[in-house]
Image (cartoon, rainbow, N blue to C red):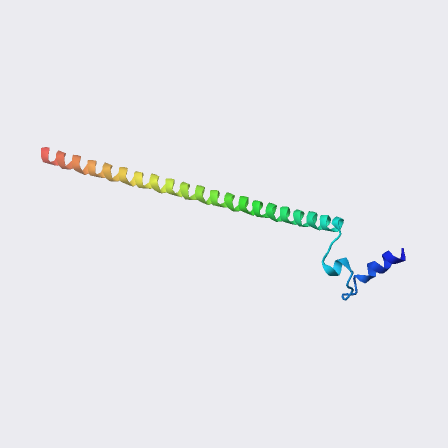
Length: 102
């Protein structure tokens, strides 16, 4: 028991040559815990990245939809304008023909 307590406090002595922690050697269960912790952190980071990508994808789709709607509206306006011009040209042509006839 005394030996375990002594080895526990040896971690605070940086010059201890036989200390596993000072030498960078981890016990297998500590290594497994650290790997699990790093794996969870990695998964959390991947999840955050996926969520941000999904959000950006939704924003992009919304923007594309708004652009398509505005383009459709502009096309309708252009078609309306073309139709009005044709109607005016037809009216002026008809009035010209009628004026020549009568």
